[in-house]
Length: 104
Image (tube, rainbow, N blue to C red):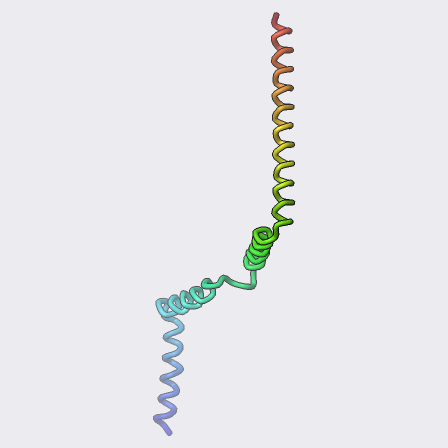
């Protein structure tokens, strides 16, 4: 009976020493981090954001109608950008002409 008490006391003391040892505690933390970083942590929004982006890309790559709509939108945006650049060039030329007429 006395040896059993001593063995239990030794086990408790051993557990305390292991918990206080920084090298063992560090290894335990690294093991937990390695397991959670394999798939990422599901408690933050990164997983959900990645899943939504993946679903959107998959939908666009497999749906022809979505591809056509995306290309039309891109073409309209490019056209508007070109018109904006042309307008800026025109304004620049107007300011340049005003400066020349003011000097001469």
